[in-house]
Image (cartoon, rainbow, N blue to C red):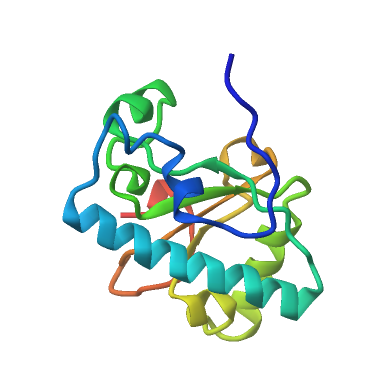
Length: 154
């Protein structure tokens, strides 16, 4: 039986690791990615609270995903979760994801996502749009932030 994540008000690096680092240790690069991701997502959570008055319950639905876990989830073979560059957070009504997308478009691609240097998987294309949002770090088409459609995310 899988333990259900507990809602919290603070995101920790341990939340992102989900205990999987004990069996699957991180490389130095993955540790660097983890710190970078944690810093940016924590900033985003604070900015969402300030901008929209949304006091998020922080629940990591998917964090660090070593290859074995990635295969079980039938996820992308080059998933950023495998290198600690992605996290999925609970967003029950998909409200936060939609507001972040609107904010990004409203501020000519320099809204909250731009200030945090994060990518958001477009909530319209998130598998089943089932109450979570995907955030990651990295570069796509020469940009360090934005909203992406999974099938076009090269």
